[in-house]
Length: 304
Image 1: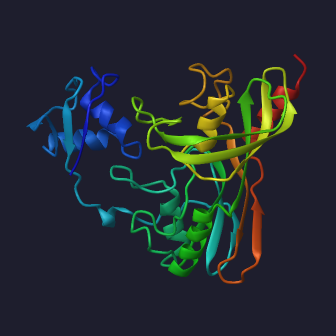
Image 2: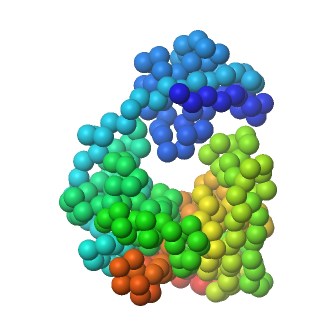
């Protein structure tokens, strides 16, 4: 059972909409089902999905047990950058969710991995996230390491905790960045907009992003970002915080994208490097820029 109170900014919102915003991995339709089954209460009373909420309303959610059997292998092609008996590193495409969540059990990277790897995935993170030791957003592309056994999982997780894994991203941001820099802040859940993260919020965690200018355009800058930490939406939040949100970002960028054909942020996890858990040697892979990203760069280079 989980509960929280409605804030002043959330007052007037529909119950099902607020819940899907509060729990970003779960869909609105999933919560509509829970509400109809009587598993969600408002001020200790059953409610309807469209009920309008008021400030200080107490919402309680009784989540059902995970539906383990609904996570099935699916023959979805994988762009494999590296693979051995311990690890598989894939180039995740835009639009693919990393792992299933209640109400959303198909078409994810985990479904594809279950088909490709059969029973060879670590079990530390449970049946919904087999092998998953870190993640990137649905519309972020690029390198992602998956562990095939618990030995590899523990070793890679330790490197993530120590911030020793090399993670370099490519991005296009609004405005002209004139020089390289570093953003240091804390990052935590936005106090009103629950789908968003924000800098310098209470109980936030330390976050550090280094950025390097690769190329400047009249209204945009092509950059490389290197993570010291790995907070949710870190690069997206940090670039917004210095006035240079990522082009195409639906959460942190301008309301109207100047390139309507874009589907989400122009952010690509290009380089991933780590110490191999079994050999002890440094392993690094590079995920090529996706076609949409390359085409956009060519478009930006054309004379106005």
